[in-house]
Length: 194
Image (cartoon, rainbow, N blue to C red; front, side):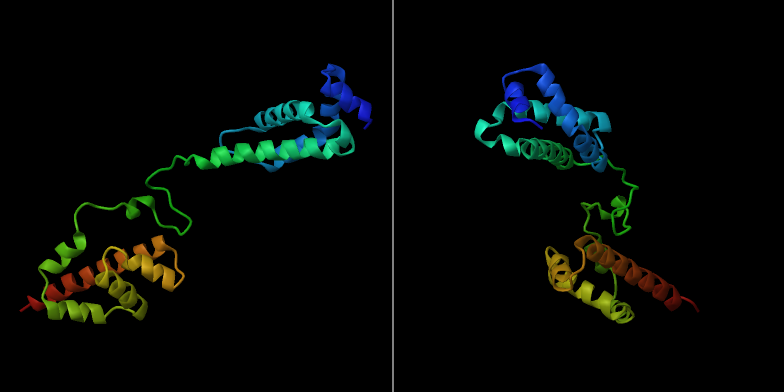
């Protein structure tokens, strides 16, 4: 492209601006097709790209007109990336029944105000609790031990030491406590049979 076209576009010539836009339009389409944002459609991203060109043309320096096309492409690229950052900074709406990347439903990760663990251990015989603990696998014993040692930060420490996602470790802790509860309930029923 001729340097005169960039100078004319910088001075406000509409035909020169349209020529520049037509020249970089294939790049715009390519970039906009690559990006899929939940709030923006293809046409919206193209419009953002056109605005980036319009804002970038007055900033062209006459000494660097040989690199003007690459500068305008960088303007387009930056504008689309900025729009992506804006969209990704807002959380996506989701349902409690939806699952996270580990397959754990969001409903199971909610924190209850009741301390169910202390309620669970309150009425149980300690020897039966030990039996239930011994029936667990090694991994379940480990995660439960970290939780018992520090009920506030133990699971986080466990997930960091064993390189396990925190939510998965928390889910494993909840699953282990349910397993112990079921063991104790079944064991108690066996004690009362005559």
